[in-house]
Image (cartoon, rainbow, N blue to C red):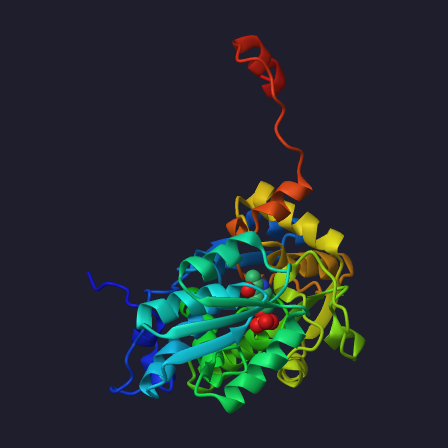
Length: 356
Ligand SMILES: *Cc1c(COP(=O)(O)O)cnc(C)c1O
């Protein structure tokens, strides 16, 4: 059996790599596309929804797809250090791949706004983690300035190699289904991922691997929805910290993906996000972080709004990207459910509480 060796190995003919690129990989991705029967049934008999579970990457989010490319290219350029601003997952991924490559990694995070698991990852992988008094947008401004003035590679999604790596998610979906889906839902934060997916679908179409293109449906959190509102948000607010971004770096590219694909970018409230988060965990058995549930929250919303035209005898295939693992943010989970009851260590007491 041929072993799976990561995306650069698998999709090198579609990626800007050469024989001289030192491949830094943790055998990332090849993530499962999980059929979601309950979610499909909620939408109607013609719907078939699949979950692209990106939480199963080496550091627990899709960021690894882009990071294997960004770090490999930084090595190829002979750089010794990388830097990023992060709402958490970029820093976790950068720290892990930099450790693997033997590069110095500097991470700038908004103070007090990073989920516990992500903070632990950056620190244990040995990154220099620095918190700034400000939000993600402030952190990104600072690291952009530093990367322009020092010999250090910026590995946020404005780094074009990040987008190149991330576009492979579309390839995997099409390779698995044997065709392109009809719709693709995903959360939108800094908007690199929607940009990358759309680029991937368009390239596969140009290579004649697929005969149609999906419509891209992006979802922002209501308190952090600059693209929906049409202006930057000064103090973005949402429980979904990974998409708590007020001025997305790939704003225009996200609008291009929306317009070219005849898709939409809409906002979902925190309570819609939480109910989708619980639905995924309790009905589909898939635990994600809150930001990831924005894709499903948006799908529920559009389903209720009758956004999807009923097409007789045709199955509507929809992908929801689940961007990060639920264990990244255990505190978010505990906040949405009751803590367990405590009873006597006695058969009757446990049976009674268990409702047997
Ligand atoms: C980074 C991230 C996002 C947002 O992706 P963008 O490319 O910034 O739009 C969404 N969910 C999770 C879990 C993330 O880590």
